[in-house]
Image (cartoon, rainbow, N blue to C red; front, top):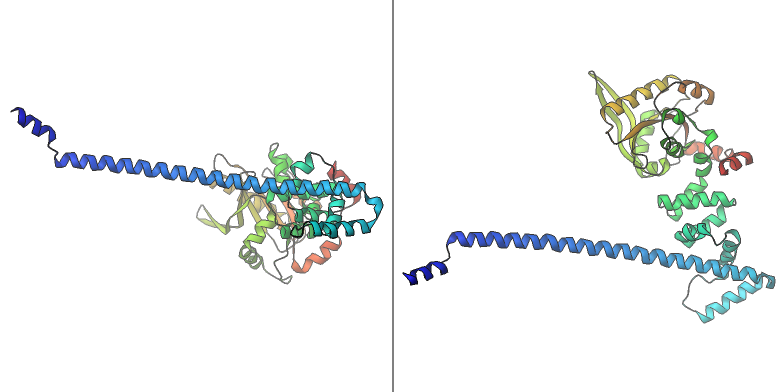
Length: 362
């Protein structure tokens, strides 16, 4: 009997093997999950560190250029030929080093003349590439407007070509001069949401990727806008995500179609855009107001901010639009839009008054 007991202790049944395999499988699964958790954690660390290295390297480069610029300013009494000679000698000493041409040295000198070594230089300009900073120096004369474009570039992640595009289409004048904007956001939205939404509104919107004649129908322009969705989102601005075109709503067995529906991640709101190929008419506000109420009732989530609307017309008719918006309880902005054929005339006549710029800059 004792030997039988020993045998029973050493005997392994099929049930025992099954349990063991299950346990091994669970262990392998647990180890596998842990492995991928470690892998992803290390990948995140590498990406974060790499980005910091690149950012710090760029910052060091910009600050070095600024420091060289200061040295050039301190010795500018030697004349322009001094920089030419300096560039040649630096090339001899550092034959593989790029960025020390006479032209670039003059940019460094101008860079140091235009900006102070302050928080803005350290925190904003040093985050931009040298090419971005050169564009700002070349194309923007006003220092405060330069700062505005610099901040927008960082916030929106603009490439050099996008920055040039925004400057050429006078984004600052269209987005920042609040006197040009027709809206009821202060009356219909709470603070600070009203200010954030006002900053999103432009006047006019520039659709330079649409080249059509004046008789083009609304649906054709909508189609062109959505066919060029990347360019459209760039023009709309920061945080816009496209939801749909001719977005369908069925209410009491009736079909309704929103021209363009977006969601803005910055203010956490749905945005209804209605497009009209005519000048502004008061009845357009009533239709847009209806769509805003419908979206708030049937689409908007509990954590979303109130839906707001943008009405785009060929001519906003300022006084008429302001009267039509009076006592409307939904947030609506009215703007004009320009297509490619209309842009040259707009750009020729869009320069703001000096008092407008001073008012904006505070």
